[in-house]
Image (cartoon, rainbow, N blue to C red; front, side, top):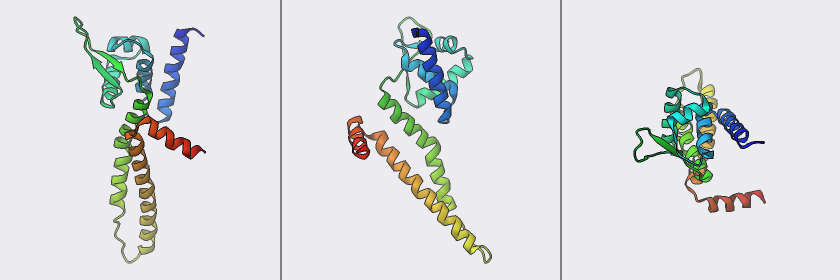
Length: 169
């Protein structure tokens, strides 16, 4: 397989993987492009390589910057903005976990907290009890997942690998 073909296959596969995880496919493809690029890239480079619009490229690049996966890089004498991607895959994983927690898990825990306080009336006491018990169970596992993800996303790689290896024994 030639390098160009391998790069294209990686970008497409990373994009599919991202969409399976609920991440915009184009955003995942842009991220993949930056993961394998040894030089900084401009928005125009991204647009040309992935055959996407300027608006699509800009929107997804801004999101990747917000997630801490891309950085602006200034080049003397250039008017265009250039970007470089985070290459440390451990940091990438940590930042993605934190972003997903903020966007998905934390709002769900907030909703579950509100739903714990349903008031029964004379006709639905048992139904409310069943409902609130189930909500509490879901909230408990959600809060456990949130704490575990926080621990992983703030830990050092060596600590995590040691704990993971103990679990796998």
